[in-house]
Length: 358
Image 1 (tube, rainbow, N blue to C red):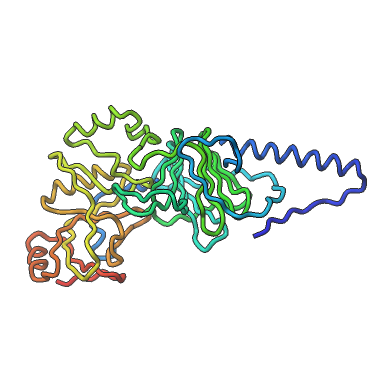
Image 2 (image 1 turned 45 degrees about the vertical axis):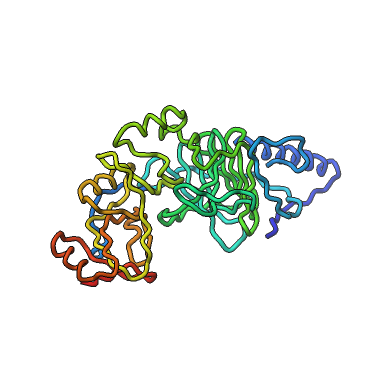
């Protein structure tokens, strides 16, 4: 996609020289600006029942930097970026959080989620970036940027976002700055660390130290900056493990009051029946909320929102975690359990539709 710039005709060579000098100063200032540079409140309840830049050839790069080479044409001169008020991107049910969509010219819409600790944006990592192996295994689909460095991760379970960072716009959130200087580029920077998502493939390029998958040093608010803080939290029987929260706040593990670690299950959407004993609508402290429901229903499991299309993934923009008993394909046992303890029987299937086999 080509950016267009209108030029006013000039009547003298002197005026042209003055305009050219001014354009150089604008571009220099813009370059400096770009180089300086996830959610709802809720309560537990039943909702699954009735409908309720580093330049090539530079002498050195910081350790851990990964680079994706993207063929591009020389960038045209750019107009001054329009500053967007961060409040335009504020998550309505999560004070201090921000989210917006973006496009770099491809078929997929990108997503960024930011807070006081930094920003995470979706994109495609370079082939040499390793797969994730811990709590969200598989190819990373997003890059996290914070004051300490960058970390490959992924984004899942975010309620729909309508706000958009458009070409020619920039937003400043504390020390973090993200900008869309042209139609094919998203740039985010905080301090000396930065990343770029570019082109139809949303290729990620990073500058700065790349942290290990299990390094949460970008999140001091979670008490994970110092190793001693992390180990100390684990020594407390009912302390919630921050490493089981993804970049957007998606929970994959909680600790119950007895100290038992319960990780999110992933039952197949193969027609099996489950009894949803209670559902948790996410809040600012979702781990504690989910753990409280597991304490209330011994033997129950929980799954992440939208595990199967036949379950409600969100309500009113808030993600929903089903707390349930898996009865497999034994419909008789499922219905007996429902009669004994209440709740909602549901069939896990690959198609949308809330089916009660009882």
